[in-house]
Amino acid sequence: MKNSDPKNKDQAPDQQQQSKNQNAIPGQAPAGQPVPDKMGTFYALKFPGFRLLWFGSLFSTFSQWIQQATLSWVVYDMTGSGTLLGTVNGFRLVPNLIISPISGLAADLFDKKKILIYAQLPLLIMTLGMGVLFAFGKVETWHLLTFALLSGIPSAIFQPVRSSVIPVVVPRSALPNAAAMNSGAVTFTRILGPGAAGIMIAALGPSGNFFIQAAAYAMVMASIFIMVLPKAPKKATTLASVKKDFADGFAYCIKNKAVRILMVMALFGPFFIQPFQSLVAIFAKETFHSGPQGFGYLLAASGGGAVLGALVVGSANKVEKRGYIQLFGIIGFGVSIIFFALVTHFWLGLIMMMFTGAFQLFFLTTNQALVQLSVPPKLMGRVSGILSIEAGLLPVGSILSGFSSDVIGEKDTVIIMGAMCIGLGLLLLFFVPMVKNMGPSVAMRAQKELEEKETPSMAQSKV
Image 1 (tube, rainbow, N blue to C red):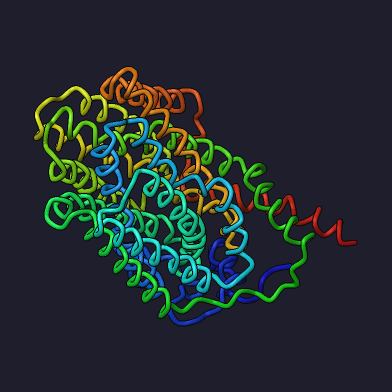
Image 2: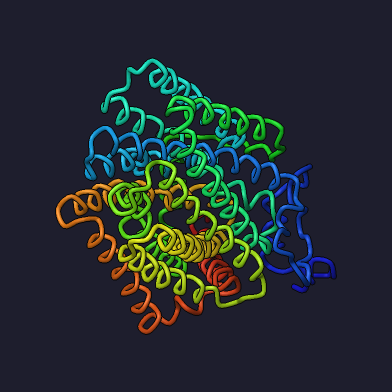
């Protein structure tokens, strides 16, 4: 039967789907909004809900980068152990393995706004507590390990829910741009956070860093509080229905070929990409002899490169085969960290860190955007939670990289990591054609085909 409404006839399939899943409320992307001929680099920021989410991300990630840089420097300065350095950084992400999938399910079933606010409150309290311990000189190694582990719990709740909000506040056609802007917020604070952390360690001590983190968490709570989001649909929740909803998220990731491949690629990051950041503290002290300020500048240089990368990805709205951007990113990252491991001059290290930041963002941001395009809004929380499991694997990669730096040295460790990234990129480029051809239309077409296959079977099961 033909659609008699010409307005609906001209809508793109993804817009029709969004129209069914969203209510028109202030701060939310209007349902069925036509796709503009030209999207600027900052197009997603025109939507009020995304603006609030974006500014909240600035404060949240600013505090996280200060925390990571401060913990990294204090742990290595106190112990001189690369293994313990990797362990503390890894402990922060352990909760992702268990909590993130559950949090993602909660995002699909309950009030996202309340979950986000309640997740920030314990972070604020724990950070203030650590600031007090540092101020009175009572910090021991076990305090750092405990804080790293416990602070990871609310973070594991916050991130999947936050990711599930993005498709609610922007139209699906703008998701690649929103993903780039989201990563831009993270990487912009990567410039400010580590650099500020290094300077503040020297000027104020670690206690000042933790008090500033607490203030940033308070700003995050304020931005969430004034954000307008649709109410969670009222649904009778039983143990059986929760189990089914949870299983549906995993089933979708397995059945959708595009999502399956993208998630396998994402699992490479915790072992050979993200652990590199925790080793930078060793290079700052042992290779460049630059102290906490130099350590902050190295991480800030990486953040600067990532911001440039975010601007490039955000401007590439008309690029269809975004798979090439992923592969270019992972190969370029491998090459740049190998060069970083080989240089001995601090200024060359800064240049290489800029390249590592840009290439890492190319890979991770494009991967995230394609996942969001491949998933219907009703499953976004669950899929985001499952995807966050990869962050929970980072402790394994961090501990292994730290242990490797103690055994064979930090330079050889980084060279091996870079070689693995180059090898994976070349393997996918030449032997898995689907990866390089991935783009928005491919991802959304795979989603639509899977939904069409499942609709008859679902209807039959209800008969």
